[in-house]
Amino acid sequence: MAILILTNEKEETVFELDKDIVVIGRKSDCDIILNDEQISKHHTRIIKDGERHRLEDMDSMNGTCVNGKEIKRVLLRDGDRINITDTILLVYHVNKMQ
Image 1 (cartoon, rainbow, N blue to C red):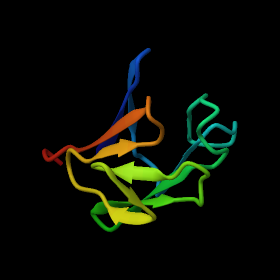
Image 2 (cartoon, rainbow, N blue to C red):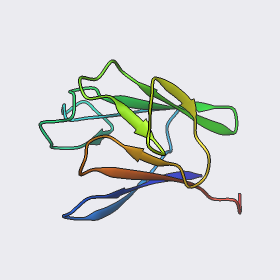
Image 3 (cartoon, rainbow, N blue to C red):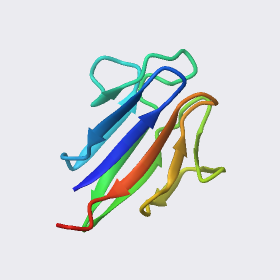
């Protein structure tokens, strides 16, 4: 199973990607809720794509970057660093033991 590790100046939290679609944003109906005004209500989503995951920006106001490059859609690789804002970093990891 893949996970996201949220790292910001306040905390480090692990989220399991256990659904086919995981929506990240600040609205209460998101799967991963991040309370930061720079984040759109529905900012980005991670979609299970076979054995891999695809990250898609949901036309957010401030965009989404992976490994320092702004993206609209990208297949994630183990260790990819996802920046949602200047202060929020998500790191994608795959459990290779499965």
